[in-house]
Length: 416
Image (tube, rainbow, N blue to C red):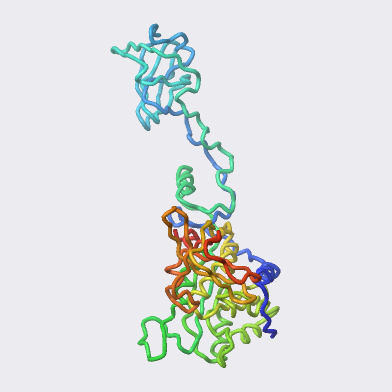
């Protein structure tokens, strides 16, 4: 197994070469549980919306031609023959010279093709004076004007949010066919890692990565399956990784990919199937030990044990694959322009991601200041950082006052 660092761009190309999103199939979901799911088929309307000609104003339904010549100083007289409330189906049609009182949302009676607003009329008993001329279709939402029967309302691959679910409800849908959610197995490794709920012995820490990565998976539209903490035992780790591969669509581990005597995650993963490891270390900081394998076509990401490095590599490399597995649109991180608040140094020959906080100076310029304690092992680094500045491999530093691009963590899925 070759331990050769490759560039960040080479790592992304290696992923693209080997990643073939599996068709996970679809399932029926009740409407109120379909939020943030992906539509699995084109949705074709089986009805017109609205299903009738409806008034958009309180007023009087008329035949437009009967209002010809109406003006403020010369009213046209019509005879009111009925009234139509919301949800009522009129059982009459208008004859020449007739009108019907109607409320907003009411069904127009037969023959009526326009509505005169209430404020443009004056009524005494059944006699109606109209002081404005209306055209056919005025103040009327025609049948099928919003959605026509047989039309594609929502396309396959649409991410269902509140507006889309509202459309489905308008069509009377109680359930909808959506893509299955990709299942992502998450496993933490390391002799010092302790599962939550257990007592913390000296020299040990709780499993930060397992929970932050599971949450990041949910933000990305996946379903995490937390497999807990693996013991520092080759056979035990191999067995749990085999289980993870057979029961999920992707596997993510953290820890055990550095150069310690018990860092043998990469060795075990590489032996699980072909092609095995395709990325064995990336020339980046933080995240250098990141290892990527494909077992058949199934991705296995082995991320660093340091919390901020693990989560950063997830956002940069793993998140797009989780989205693609679920048939979701790949949403990149947002980027804003700012000015470096201080000189930021890079790691020699490595692409460097400097965690920064954003603030405005007295001139209302956005300033990017490196996060204090922004080392990859600092647990709070990503929580306190607004984003990161990316320094290329061939740059030694970014000088104070230089305009920089800041990739934002908030603004990725679920982190608004």
